[in-house]
Length: 162
Image (cartoon, rainbow, N blue to C red):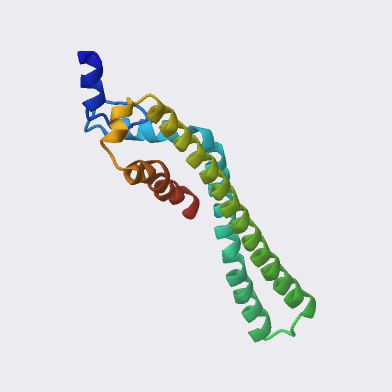
């Protein structure tokens, strides 16, 4: 083996997706995160929008309860039609909240699956270019942890917090 090959095989070169010079600039970190999330950004925005609709829909039943109290406790005779309309509006709002919350969760989980696949493929491509000596210096569990477990833990953050 040549001297260069020996030096390369023994080098401590971590399997990073892209080598960047460390900076204290938070903008650089946001740029890297934005680059990583670019393929799923649209779905995350849709999920946030669905979650906003869900949050607003969750307020409607409280407004309906206030209006029901005004109707029932008021001095005028109770308008049954209005009471039932308020009940159905509250029920509809709760159903809307359930549906939009479920769709937001589904959207983020599907985006998470795609993001994990993308990150794992990038790591596998990077590891494919690492000299074989790098693997002999490390336990297979360490590589498995980097490619599988660490990616799952980090990516689940996006799907668990719509």
